Image (cartoon, each protein chain N blue to C red):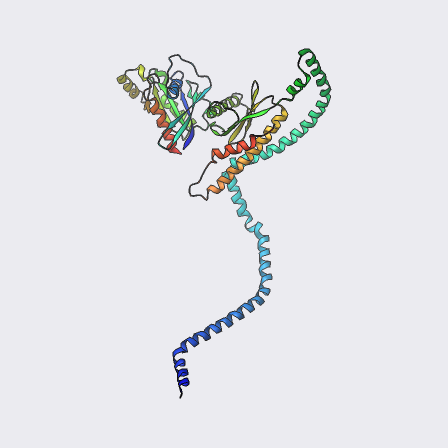
Length: 165
Length: 283
């Protein structure tokens, strides 16, 4: 059986939200930065088990440094949220826990996946201490450039959403 | 004592109990006959009393059962407010629209009468200077609107519930998502409460958007989109949506009696309905 689920990708400017989607949907990556204006929508069907698949309708929202400024209307009816931060830019995760609190308030009762992107830009050991120092518990550490953990993250979310209904 | 007498004595000894049983059965049949006869007599006396009581009971229903029925109905409406409003919306909308449309029609006819003379002369002049035949220009004026595609979309999430299309397009789930994003942006940006995006125009196509409480219907129309066509499209949408919401309410009701309740109507069935309503509709 196939179900359709809406997910939104949130995070500060330039953390690689669009690149993550590009990697997941088209398995490609571009170094050229194109700012997302408003919202961009893509879709990918994910097979979660032998009998079920989930049609993920991915809403790529424009980045914002103020999470409070995210348009509430875009979040309506969403089934899952991915919050992305850039592990190479502290300004994108310095207030991560308070940002996540706001996101959770705006999208109650839906799964929230926390993703640290651009791990190809930092040294592994430094990354772990960086997360520890900032009291961050990321669900996935990804690289849209190399493709590390990108498919796993989206597939995990699709499986979660399939199991929830 | 001869042989016959002996046989009679032997019979008496052997069948005494049977005879008693036969006598008892006979008595019971007699009793039943009496009861049946007396019941007929009894019924003639009792029936009017029962009828009178039934009549009293029927008259007392509004006082005795009425409050319970009203309370149950209120509770049901409270629990399924959106469904009820959604079901009523097309009916009310149609009534209001019909009235307004009728008034506009009268006004429009008056204006048409005034303008037809001028239009005919304008067409003649266009034909003379432009080189086209007057008949072709007249056909252009008439229009030729066609429904190309219809989508039933969930509000908020923008998920496609069902669709019907006469032509091949890109992924409809993505279209419905993008349409919802545009609609959401426009309605949000202008911050006007209770205002809805109703029409998107692009060259030879128009997307008519009719919003309801839980869903909205987007109809892609090719050709010049006149007021008359809009009126017809709205009628078809209201008819379809009314039917769809009735199916929803039926489903809510019947699913309570199922072991595994079904919470949505299959998209195949809705798709079939969309094709029925919009497939051959002339606008």
